[in-house]
Image (cartoon, rainbow, N blue to C red; front, side):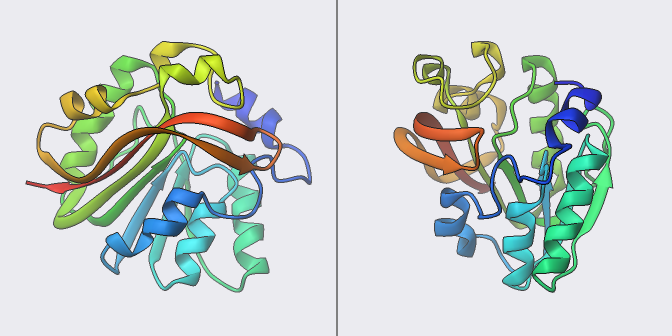
Length: 199
C-alpha cells in the first residue's frame, strides 16, 4: 500500500489492528535486551506502547502520519512516551549498531525492498541486539485472514535464512495460529516467526 492508502486505512477512530500487542511479541519480548528498540511499519502503535510500558526506549517508524498520530494518542492513554518517525522504509536510515531490538510485525514489502532492508537491519543491531519478527507466509493466501493479497510480499523460513546470513536464530519456525488483532487480522493464519541475533 502507498502512503495515501495507509492514511485512508487508519483514518478512523477504531484501531484497525486493535490496541493489544501481537501475541508473539507479548510472549517473547524478554529476548530483547533493555534499551533502544525500533519498530518498523508500526502503524497505530500497539506494539510500541506495549514495549514502552515495559521500560524500553521505543521508536516507531511508519509511512502513515495518520497511523502514527493514533500511536501517540495510544501512548498518552497508557502514560508512556514513544518516538514516532514518519518515513518510507525505502529511505529510512536505521543507523549502525544502534538498536538493542528491531521488531517487525506484519511488515510485508516487495521482495527487492525487503532484501535491501534486511541488510540494513543486520547492520543496525548492536552486537547483542535482537531481531524479532512475525509475518505471513505465502500459505496465508489459502486463509485470507489478513495480509497482502500477493505471495511475493510474504516471507518464509527459507527466505529469512537467505536474507539474514549474518544472524543466528534462537527461534525460527513456520506455523499456523489464530490471530485476533482488530478487524484486519482475524482467524487462523500461516506465519513465520523469527528471533535472531548477530553471529
